[in-house]
Amino acid sequence: MDKVKIGGTTYKVEMVDDLAGSDDCFGYIQYKKSLIQLDNNLEEQMHNKTFIHELTHALFIEAGYNDHEEDMANRIGLVLYQALKDNDFSFIR
Ligand SMILES: [Zn+2]
Image (cartoon, rainbow, N blue to C red; front, side, top):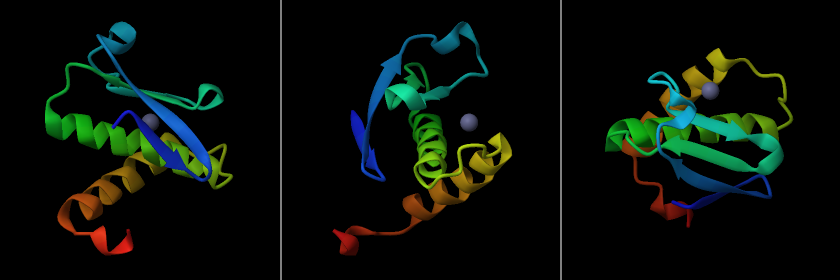
């Protein structure tokens, strides 16, 4: 996915080699640029979980929770990932 629309904003999704030069930085969101960056070296499951985590940050921001905690994005992102992965939401389209 190279872009995702959230709350009327289109976020560009960009793959980056060695994001932030750190093993513990898998993804990053730049709100002012409407940009989600993901490390290019993640295996598929970790890539998808990281994308949903960054998407969760965007959901909070677009909902007006500009000062949400990282822990909130972690918790909501994990259950959102599970719900999206384990259910068929094609009926919504
Ligand atoms: Zn985060």
